[in-house]
Length: 92
Figure (cartoon, rainbow, N blue to C red):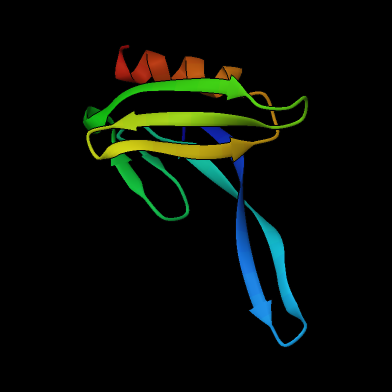
């Protein structure tokens, strides 16, 4: 494992009392060969770029540009170290 970036996923729950939104916390994990999230695994040769855009003071969006499209992750901690490590490994 080279670097880890926590991210937040929001899930809509519907029950007898109505609907509510629940935040779940996960991690993007950068290894020597791939980037793993809860739902996906991206081989590094299929990752073209990674970028970040702050949305509010405490939340931003991390974009992972791959051969399957752009995947967006909502984050609440600065991704600077993860981006630097990722760009060093993928060479962009």
